[in-house]
Image (cartoon, one colour):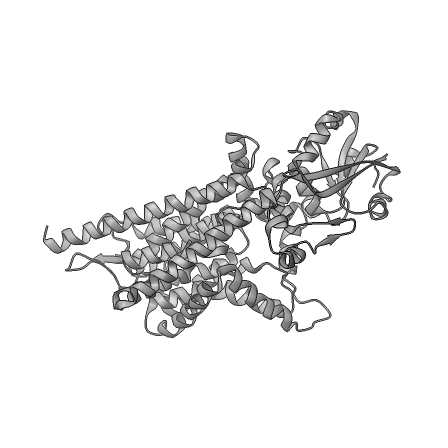
Length: 543
């Protein structure tokens, strides 16, 4: 083995060890945050889906529910167990991006891809929260990696480096094994499995299909004749069966619900304020000093893609989720779901990593190093401060009064609520129920919990650890399927709300009688009452 090859192997091993160390560090950090913060409103709302598993669900496909259900069975009913699959899968996503960037560029580019990816807020947060995005990102990345293996096979060059093989992957000789790599047949099988698991994670999978087909039609059209492509489609279709069966059983409600969110309403009006809000939100979620270079790489990928297939690959796989969810805000109020584009932005971190590596080699090492360090310090310090605020509420006492006033501006009728309380668990409610033996009166003795809306339903359900049935009386979302009304006819309701008595009564008056005030349960944080839950009773539940 010559000296050049030995030096290359040594450099590769050093880079790989550096990436493993980074993945380990970021994993421990996210694990600590997952352990020490309560569930957000969305996470709490999803809890019941992991507690009582089903083939699929109204809001999302089932994979992240299934994974957390298994984690709860293994590690018990606690916050970390619920979030653990997401924390692990995000580390897997980082590693797969490293492999993909190394496949398409080199080790240094892959290293910078890993670093900058873990300095973008939306991805780090996705790697902590109990949400469908962590499985989505992981299996999307795995599918991209397998797709790159098909589109851009590598061969060993004279220098000992592995170089992209520009031969047509649609030809039959591509099925041959080279240097121990899997045959193309198995790559197609893996692609079908990867896309299938992506579809089980989130409906965003449709954009993966769009990007893949666009690339094939415009750059490698001979692949349309390859049987492996259709075998991959059949395999991923098998993974979609639970979603299709559940939707068929429920009048396609999930497909209708999700598609309606981005469809224009009958009174069509262009909302440029929503459109602008989307741009600002995306920039803030990725962090502006990362979002701007990422957008630059998106535009650059289009330009370079005219002559370089791998850049066209980046552009095609990023195009549809970014453009669709951004343009849709012109006519549909997607609210603050700025993370919906993130699966498209993810692949653009690879060319950005390559650009950073070139800048470092060209003499900008100090500037790049300073940019990366400041980005890291800002993001991780912000996450630590936010976590500390969630658990202690220190900002109300020590934060600037002007900003403190705006933080406390969210008013819910009789309560002034710090929004960080949305990520604080209502453990005082469980204490109240246990002290008054209300949990023992559920089921056979005829009591269940009612709440005013589906978001509060999740917070209450998680606080009570699923020990008593919970029904949402307003917009119910998944609680339509978690709670079967006919099983509870004639039973009494313990109704919980943050609203005043008049609003509470209007929520339940059509479904039960003898509405009476029970108690107020203060939710305290470090000894300070942050919000109050009002409890009522009503009898003879009916529909």
